[in-house]
Length: 271
Image (cartoon, rainbow, N blue to C red; front, side, top):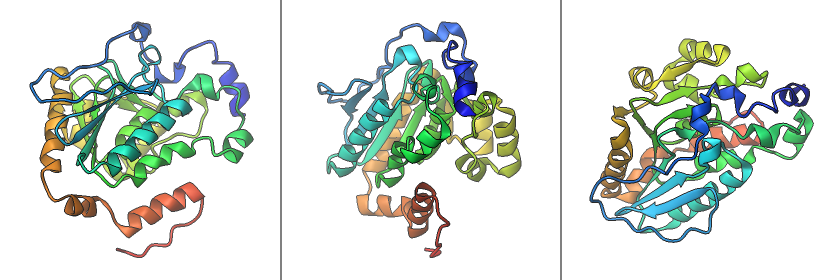
């Protein structure tokens, strides 16, 4: 079972990711290198940083020692800020980013190690991961470094992905004996055959491959990704917000996501 298998790995930090040991050194959050005005206010959050850049809400995942591993507490904070930006009339688009080393290097294995399948299922342990699908405003992922497992899922949950030229994507869950992620979003983005090859082998793929396959919109130098993502968000935010939100929403999208979270078959309305 999952618990006994993961316990054997508990001495290895985030082994599912195949991340070099050097990546665990503390690092500074990527900062903007352009003149766009920003409004950075003190944050009550522990695992994320927030800023505003001319109608763009910026969220920076901030667990550097864990390569932004997606813990329950981090997701609570992320969902809280996403909802606030979604309801803020001065925000027209949202950007989510991480650091140069990792956008998010997967789920927090240490948090999962002592949970068995029944506990995860009965407590809806991953229920917080679906909140991003309810956000009406466009979300742009600015990805540098590793976006693996849950980190890849988070990037794919965004409407647009901009990636740095050294970014690495992947769904390596199969290497832990865990049910792989990405089976829905990755398949829709790049096609069944290529997605299943990646999911069933757990291999990573580059930003250039992601762009070629249509998962990533554009690839930039590492130090330009965040700047370009914010510029894109500002351009999007300059248009009619009802029109923008209508472009990303549909009844079938909501029904599909709700059906998945409620573990039932979707009832398609084709609208």
